[in-house]
Length: 475
Ligand SMILES: [Cu+2]
Image (cartoon, rainbow, N blue to C red):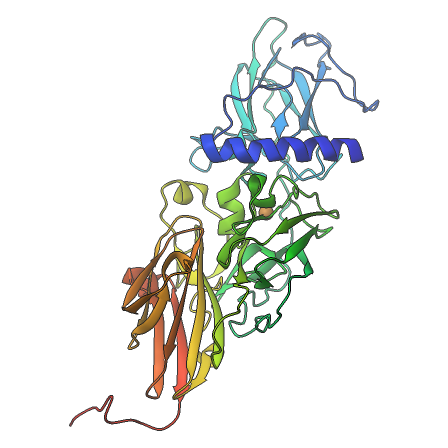
């Protein structure tokens, strides 16, 4: 298992890079084996397994290995049973669909989730061409597809196939995943470099997406965004990524503050229950996104796997009264705001880049009401604002507040007196301003349907004395 996991990690690293370039892994070479070490199943070594005439068909094994079906095309006679064996350290399933038909056309079969080492079989009685894929974690988008061709070169049988439907797991109680925007590390306040150990854990959990809507998030530390990391320019960061034993997926981390392959993603493809680590020198000051970079990367990101790392310049940041940490993200779900139930990811909506939810800190209107940010008149505020995406660019705006100073794209240089600043997916900005009069200041993506319709709203509640010289309603 250890060796397998290592090979898988190497492959995933390669897949990560290739997938980033190609988008899909459809042209990748597949291993040419269907062998199995499992003695409990018989193995057909030829590509065509003849069905026996007594009604007990032949059996052929297809391994699910290294995020692929071990063979892209399997040719069998009617009546042959195909045993799918999961040899990966993560879950897979076997679904009768192609990427084009998934969710649109009826499926003849769909296996339950196959945990590592588990197998599932299906007897193909009817002639035909059966597209198969794994839609667990969107693995088909990273190339986990294949085809079973059933041809009548032996006795055909016409009995109908049974569909062993997968049992849906009972959903545990939903929790609040939205990161508290005030829950961030204090300024570094050091005059020399250090080695800083950062420990993160990838977790998969059912969380509250909106009132009456739950969603299965994948998240660093169980919050969206994950914990804000804060170091000083010149620090050596030792990043240790653990993947919770209950995870169904590999996870990893790519920090945009890293100068090195994959931003750390190659070194951190980590299987459930395992931990991986790497070190990097925080050379460039700034505010940088980190995110999971395990295929299918957009799925890991939309599910909540992103956060910010702040690398303070050696001289530190100017003192302010309050700091807040906010990240925008877009979610592609079968449910819309106002509907209720457990929402599931909609791959077609993501393909079309049409999110049903656009949110700050992972949840519909997460930072409003009791959860609004708090400040007092006259205070100097710094906001670290990132965009996990994966796809929507944010037109970040605070209604009723001019941003005195903005580090656009989180650059070291500043611009002044900004109303709305663009924050691309995988990017960040930070802004500083003084709040002058009391009231509720509403943070939005000024592509306003996303704010008012899809949830990208947060509130900064400012208390203190009025200042009629700055703002005064007239009767
Ligand atoms: Cu992940």
